[in-house]
Length: 190
Image (cartoon, rainbow, N blue to C red):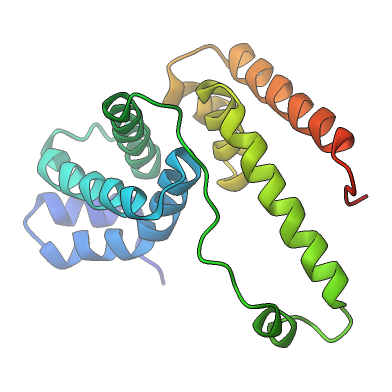
């Protein structure tokens, strides 16, 4: 039986360091993914991820248990990403991780997928990343939280500190821009 986040938090507050380590193992990948998709730089995303858990550990006794632990971590991460963007004084840049060799991609893919399909999918993913980087921060964050992390509209509204209708509008507008720009792209994947 898996221990809940709430149980691990309670144990951590009680001084059980292993429980907090379990929380890190459970949430490290989603937090890194959120940071990477928000600021787009691997090294900076790793730093934000580390800082998120450091701040969470230090503030754990102050954690109000009316919110989910994951929502609290997401809020810390988004605040750190905003701080990073302010320090950099620029719009976050989304860059693709180290490119995978086409031979490796073909070997890792199912046999039914052709090299052309793999290249098209990779090109589409790169194009989406480029377009996401151009969206306003609020729209980009709403899309990342909803589409990549599966949060509900209410959870996103709570994280962003705005009304539910605002989150829906941001998501709709951001996705509309992405669809429109992808439709204009030459050689787009249908």
